[in-house]
Image (cartoon, rainbow, N blue to C red; front, top):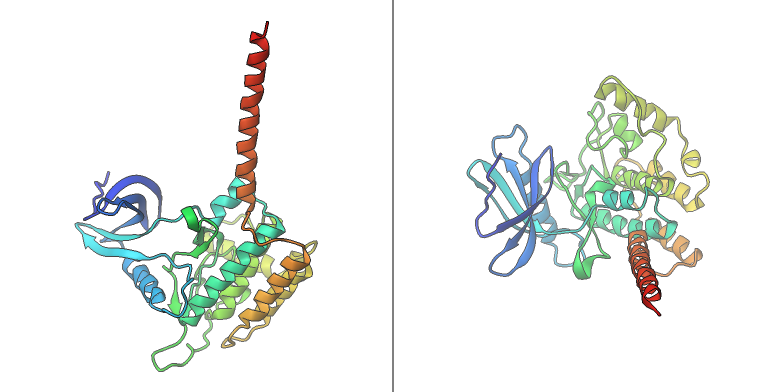
Length: 322
């Protein structure tokens, strides 16, 4: 059992754990500001916290983009045998919320989320960085007045795609898969160096995951990771985009097809993709009120609870009436 401590911050409760270490909710006693505190063993084989903190700090430097959707880092250091990073406390991930909503999102929720996820990816790319692990777990919502806003997190696998001489990184083959196989682009599976197109294709897969409830290459049985990746790749290659998007608006097919057809060094037309999503939103008659499926579900449960309470009260009054 590790006795976690961090200078100038008080630990409140544990939020989770992963391969990297553990994460706690904390508070700054001087300001009462709530924060998230990540701990990582300083002697771990592949420490990532300092690497990740550098990306956050670099991404936050651009003063031209006020609405970045990037969490702020307040402190990053080694204390004892732990690497520590203190950052904004944020809400649940989109994967958590997806599970709360019985693993299906409405088209309206998917479009409201996708427009923000696209904006986050566009901003990250504008700073010459590839995320390389676009998935529902790496997008979270804010808390309090920011609970409608989507943030992008976890830059542990991020990479700059422009070298110091200002040139795009070179095309390479024979690369091992970096990221999460479920959402990885076809080119990533084929061992091709990732570029901006791959983050966007992954976003397209995330959209279809939310709409469909699952992807055809989920739960593939295999004896080891290599065999599993191979099976996922074969299923992905054998599932045409039209088949993946069948039964859903044609814009889904158009979105994924555009991403799949981009060349290695191409700068994606983010405005084109944004317009696709916005036009479908308007065409569907939706209102940008940020009433996500989980908000509606929470409201419904609250009303049911109140209604149930009122019914009990009415029954009690009736029993007591002469």
